[in-house]
Length: 585
Image (tube, rainbow, N blue to C red):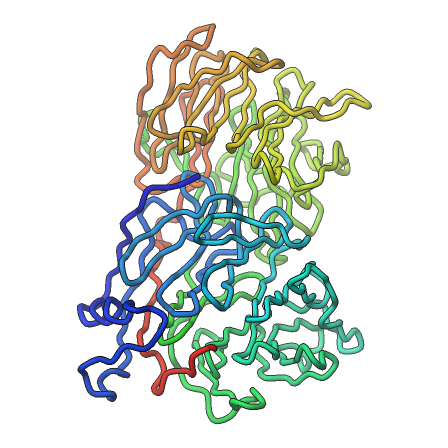
């Protein structure tokens, strides 16, 4: 889906703005400036701020994701707008920003050396997009997203799974192992590869039970069995020319590397403070040419806030946590919510009740568990485990969980019909993108496609009487709310004109709620789904990550940023090293 250009707030010192504009023409080769060389290399600091309408990151596991292009003048990053994550491309010289098509649910982007393509991970696959045409390609299976690197020969190094070594994908599509785990040293994974300037040596992060073996390592395509430890830092390596960026506590350090052997040469220098890291070992920093951007270790805590129909505060549902999707039980008191386990750093489904600070853990797995929904009697909860299994368990968390269905590719669970006969899931397809599927709960019944096409159909919700399905589709160019007949579609009605996602029905089926950025709206409909009125109920004052309404529509629960954890702008530094790093060929 093409997005119109969005102005980006780039708060920088005037000299920094002028310098970026001057260096952008032409962007591929150095420009002679009038200033003396010493002045030209003086570090200049400013702030990079994303558009107001987007939330940077690709979920709890990928909260940063910024990646500078080879010339240091383009920036790509995943971000959510109206609840939909795509890649965004920002020109640092002009400020032009746009969402890249066909990059839904993208994470961990990385650039080709010529700056013409971007690699990324989505729906369990390694993919690429050509910037000039917008054409995307599926290259390999990769689950979950642990980084990739691209050299001038067209080789891509990536981590195909959570507990293995790195794999090399050649231009002809051949996949060969590059590194293998050293089990004797307790290694558990290799991830976050980065090419050295020669395109033949690769740095990567090794996690291991033996701390003497964990850290950043270097190997080569020609002799992958020989490797050298570059740093004990347990964080993603970022390479800019002959410089290695790594994290020491909250200090971003720049370690010079020997231009021939790529081993550390000289003392590391402090280039940023404070800098953060992600739950999978990501470094909140990206660097290319003479530009460095890094993010602070800000809190990702959210608050579940109860509000009235007019938006007045009514309290909080427990303590602040790193929470995502949520659904209110039919009794209007309990809430099933996806939260990040603070110890295991995994996504799990929890039950919160009232204002109790301690929730009950419902999902038992140590992988990703998300997108829960309730049975109509409130006795059971269904959710998606490992992004492929539909799991069901009693809401009391007593009996063990059961697998109801298994899918490939990954799915998202949207709703459970009031009669208990059907589940509504979202399922991605390389040709038709996001589709809606119906999963019958009868023994032996097979899933069937409900809504598909050339556009995304998401956020499905069964009407209380089971005769209709409300969902969001971007066929108009942005997500809008539609209603269609069920079980046989064919009476589609569009109910919004200015955007909307995440429809929620009132218990009598006469009102439908949806969110748009920081706002919650209500649509009143007749029995035949004719729109009688559309009303904005309130503005929450911050982008709502997820929401739900109690059955009678008198109260709403909003997932909002915690009041004391306002996001901080990323820091941008031009001429961040003196002298600057050697350019990548």
